[in-house]
Image (tube, rainbow, N blue to C red; front, side):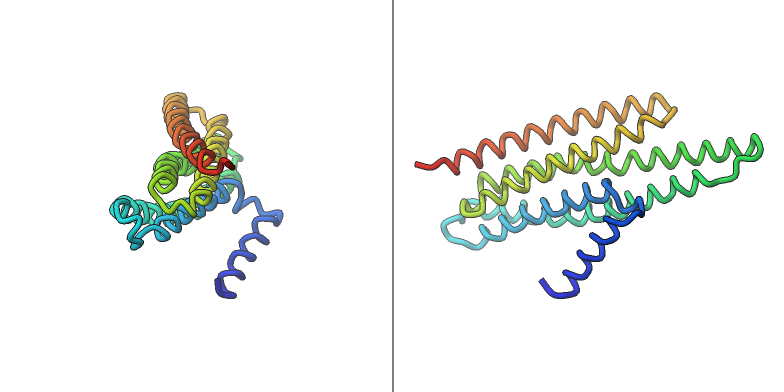
Length: 212
């Protein structure tokens, strides 16, 4: 890692710890998922090209490509989360002196809340793919890196649960009941699928860590 990369991470951490509300938990959740994706990419790369893992070559090449794409998607979602929050804050400060102004302000806030809900919901949706990739590299990847696959799965679960929290808090302020019910149903389905994949991964990793 070069000095510029270290500086960039440190700058983000300083901003995260400041009194500024964005970036916040939503961005952290997405970055957490991006890190988990890169761990699965690492396990794949530690497997590809090694003769004794030749039978897993195709699966690991696919896992590597999926991981890289996911990581980029999650980082984009981290940015979108901060932008969505800023859009809501702009709506909050719109004038409300007349009935028309109050109507415009309320509509703008509701639309911004919907966007702020859909971003973590998309993160949550992608954790299903991430957790499946963690399971794949755990089972088929280089066994010397099996704990890295396990860490990836744990981070995927943390990201999924964090994203679900952000979905729920935004939904609590949205008046569109059809939108709320649809998002809640998707959230539950995505969480359940991710949890199944994570559980299976951790059980597998634990089975490889038993001391004789």
